[in-house]
Length: 462
Ligand SMILES: *[C@@H]1O[C@H](CO)[C@@H](O)[C@H](O)[C@H]1NC(C)=O
Ligand SMILES: *[C@@H]1O[C@H](CO)[C@@H](O)[C@H](O)[C@H]1NC(C)=O
Ligand SMILES: *[C@@H]1O[C@H](CO)[C@@H](O)[C@H](O)[C@H]1NC(C)=O
Ligand SMILES: *[C@@H]1O[C@H](CO)[C@@H](O)[C@H](O)[C@H]1NC(C)=O
Ligand SMILES: *[C@@H]1O[C@H](CO)[C@@H](O)[C@H](O)[C@H]1NC(C)=O
Ligand SMILES: *[C@@H]1O[C@H](CO)[C@@H](O)[C@H](O)[C@H]1NC(C)=O
Ligand SMILES: *[C@@H]1O[C@H](CO)[C@@H](O)[C@H](O)[C@H]1NC(C)=O
Ligand SMILES: *[C@@H]1O[C@H](CO)[C@@H](O)[C@H](O)[C@H]1NC(C)=O
Figure (cartoon, helix red, strand yellow):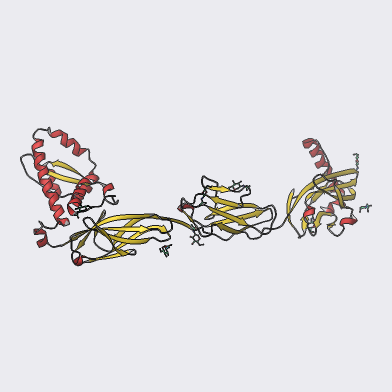
């Protein structure tokens, strides 16, 4: 570029040609172009800043003049320095601060101060066959880099869910033109019904806090020359208990009923989500009285030592900070297994006894159905059967007590569909006796009676 000043006549002729093309296209012909890579440059205070400028022209030049001016808002432009060919003439006031090495038009500012912020204007004049001139403007900002932010949390001891509020404040010691941003688990936090920001976003107010506000918070602070993120802070939020449930190491669990074999010791584990951890207590309920039998998340029941066959327990979880508690009721049924025990089923009601009870119920139902069917057209039932998806039918079959009864008209099957909503949830009312268990089971089961044509029945039983 600088060498262009001493360009050969051939180059000059090409330049004139280009100039004519510019004339046609743009209606102007300067033959001199001044360009800057960036019209805005962000500088760091105290460091050197380089303002790059390129220029080129297509004419024979005798003198190349470069002039730098500085213009701050609402002030007169100031002359910084200028050059003709290779000799620089600085403003003596700024001679140690600004440097230029002509024919390179770029300017070096060293060191950069806040007062150096403003617009820098570079003007290039070419003296040849006439005078060409062009200029550019560069806006310079000066900033102090950001120092690492620190997040303070109020109250530092933590807040109770739905009761307390929390304020996170981002503190930064150094840096200019700071822009604050809050991150939760690395993603930007947006204002919402419970998140409020101060006008500059340096504080984040959460009111009220909820369990969902638990997370890794950090503050990201940026300015044009730097950005830094604080360490992660995790607010303490007290919540719960939620999702209380009782589980056992062995035994059969159906809903809130645990069935244990006689002679076995069974360990119950009560758990609920809360912060701080719950305190657990176990309560045994007799006819009219309840008494706490143990504290802690575990309860061991040795089935031999239990006087009754059916015992009701309550696990109570209490969060001593939120002041909330939850409890779940469950029943332990102690059974004896083996066929000989099943034979004398009269006394205690085991699961096998329950099945027997269901079977009896089925037989009675079938008898009733038989009577009813005598007065009903055959087709109604058949349509009902055909409307049922095959898979549902098979599943139901797996759950059902299966009974066949031959009579004049065909084979009947009694099929139970367990109600899925009835099985896993803890009901609010406790189950007190085994008879109620059976009752419950019946309530949660939809029974259907299906008639089969004997030929089909044979296929399936094989
Ligand atoms: C600048 O350089 C050109 C070509 O070398 C020369 O003709 C001209 O006189 C010089 N101008 C000054 C002011 O030194
Ligand atoms: C001007 O000088 C700087 C170094 O001071 C160099 O990086 C830059 O490329 C030069 N520009 C031109 C157009 O020669
Ligand atoms: C100088 O400019 C005039 C008119 O613009 C032109 O006629 C003449 O040829 C030019 N001379 C050179 C050496 O470019
Ligand atoms: C939380 O903020 C709400 C509204 O800003 C206020 O009514 C409530 O008293 C505050 N709670 C606490 C514990 O400071
Ligand atoms: C929070 O940070 C901790 C460690 O710094 C990490 O183990 C945990 O997975 C983070 N949680 C989330 C939700 O990102
Ligand atoms: C504050 O943060 C919110 C959400 O991140 C953003 O929409 C808003 O522009 C920010 N305000 C300022 C002044 O930075
Ligand atoms: C709350 O319960 C925890 C155990 O979960 C215990 O360490 C703490 O001392 C209790 N606090 C109060 C105030 O009772
Ligand atoms: C239960 O308590 C009530 C009154 O508190 C009493 O009338 C009743 O007899 C008690 N029943 C049993 C089985 O103890």
